Length: 635
Ligand SMILES: Cc1ncc(C[n+]2csc(CCOP(=O)(O)OP(=O)(O)O)c2C)c(N)n1
Image (cartoon, rainbow, N blue to C red):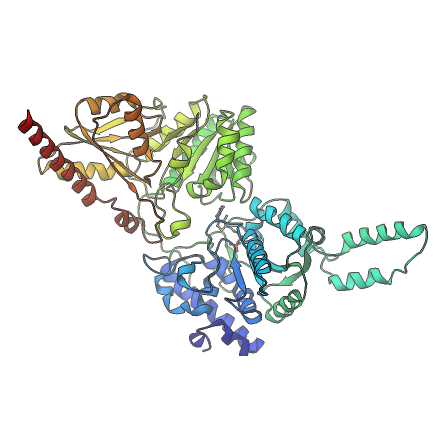
């Protein structure tokens, strides 16, 4: 066995191609076994085994900078750079990160989680190298899915213009998470399949050179003809025109061809793009035959490929997806827009039922947002189904195109709150802060799945501008579903538990936690009111005023970054109203990034637990007693 002895990538350089091929088999075996227990991004990593081996064989990490787009396909890189023994802890609390992580290794030079950043990063590193007078290589590995992201196009444009020496390896497996979409995807497919395109580039150029040079008047026409011939016959001419040397398409599982191509690329003085064709899930039949499902997978049985799912209630995502179908049947103006996440966002049933009203734009959150604004302005009812974390990409479009136009866009913000194993790049904890200050928007969060359904109806019936409902990456509570969906009056909160003296204003799944805390504290003789603060914007001013007037001490409890949160807006509200004696305590997420682990572990890390909530109420009680005691003493 070669694999257990690999501690540093420079050991690969001594191996023959046959040995590298053996190593590829062992790496696949290792990944299939380890991930069957931990889960993780299996199919993307099985697809890049040879590519990663060839990179480390040909180049010298960490001196040469290897940048992995998204970073979900860097497991093989982690194995080859001394982290093999940590795979039992993959994506677990304090364990190996599922993405590239600089703190883990000097070989991890660029962190990601969100897609399409690698080319900009590579360009930055290449420019820094040249300014510093260094001569290291810079290599970006980007998938055909990630190439659909606007940032990637922006970077291609810049790189092709500056012509810095750097290498882009395009890992083309025809898949994003779902099958890839878009004109670039069609172009790549054409290169892969057209027999003319498959002709080696050298061969074509030789052929063109054989056309005799013609002098005089005819020369220009002949040159033009040569150019057109080149267009017809040279693969990747689009990239060539953008200033790259295009090499490929090359079989991304053929180690000797890959090594040759990388060495050839290394001799190019300027940007070079290697088009590697790979199979996502390569070497494990279930993953090869359904790489969509196996993109990110929970634990499974190796022999059968049966996925071991925890039994439990459905996810919020599923309730959203089913309800959208119901609403879609009633209102044909509804159009669903997804930036490359039809499965993750629960839109497959909607897409099956209404294929014409389902739009997958690729990894293009900015475009999706502006597109939604325009659809709305033409009288349709677009639902922008997006994960909280990826919506970050579309901030300007939300301000400039959706909210400023006051367009009737419905936001279905999934994965709001902690997300667990994907960790800090994916936490859905910033959207409240970056949305609630934008004029015109309404933001809701349901306490359970039944309320989510009513919120979806609320959003549909609302015609006064953008409206969002955000829901967590959790299983639903399992409450009964009302057969009839009714809109909720905008800006109204709901008292779910009566109490006196103390109140917890909670959002989303924190309502349940607040109820549990109220139950527990009741036994200690502390009476706590629980308010479902289901509108994060606008606030329920009447309720806030009443609570303040009755001298109720309040906690605002929420699973979002505290800076800019609902809690902040409650404080702002009291300040605006001139209410200066309200006692408000904030429980949200402190000002730092929270790493991977389970959602429960992440909550524990920031003190969003039953114990912490009870302690906060107890300390409010101590402070209150002390203040009251002092008052009665001085009066
Ligand atoms: C901005 C952003 N939007 C969406 C995602 C979710 N996502 C993660 S990987 C992926 C597909 C990437 O496809 P590709 O680059 O071809 O890599 P592959 O997994 O196919 O190797 C998507 C959509 C993301 N990481 N970042």
